[in-house]
Length: 354
Image (cartoon, rainbow, N blue to C red; front, side, top):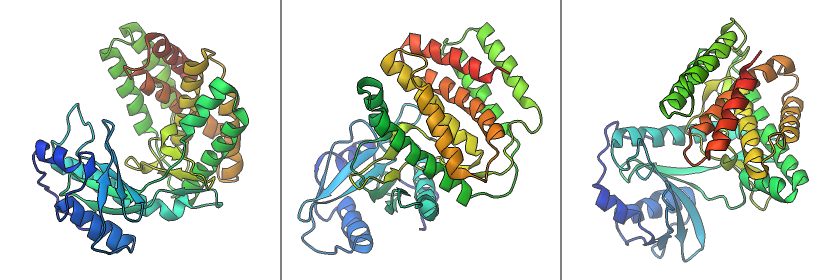
């Protein structure tokens, strides 16, 4: 797909009208994009009687679009609506680049994410840089992994959660193994990320200067050559949080949001998920240990699915580092209460300790 590197977006007020909830104006730019490129070229539904209605964006970048005569929906990810540094609609070239990156990433990982008949990657349809940097993709209806985590924590739905975690582990194992490069990594990016989140938490006054110094001190123990560097770089999702994994009525897992797809350490994906599980179970139950059985189950499922491509002890050691980074990343969020932020800091320090 060819797109200009410097993209002009309409003014913010015009964009707001373009993506406002309600019927899409006939013969306008969004109507033509949907009619010709999405429903016509990709979905094979050419027809003059197609009519489109947009749902509300819920203060995010995702907008549902329904074709009313056939009841065929798609999802629009509008990068112009995405909050970047507290603003929308500005920096059009950056937003177009982010959209282009995700579109290309989704096309790239389609064959890597379709494994075992139990998981796949959301299907991209078309992209339009000139329409607020909009990516049209398949609409997947169904609960996300966060739903199953909350159900297990609040209502003892442990069996169903563990089945979903097994699917997530198998998805990661296939994505990682099928994209393996045979090229070792050096771990410098992981160390730089730890420094970044420690500095941010210090600026936000979540960490005292003494606590930041202590985290940096234990972090230096991971600078030993070869300890954090993976033996085999793979494609990683890069934002492996529970809301990125959906479960439609078919029972399969559908992975979404590949904006941060990159080559790196497979431990980064599984450690990120472990940090999320630790945080969410403590948040929902108040028990700091409630997530541990599910973390162990997730790790065991991953190791079984990835065998014999990984060495378990070294992988789980690196995952411990990435779990700590995940916990510190979550602690940055202002919606997390002070007690849970402090818990996450303590847990991260424990993960980083020798």
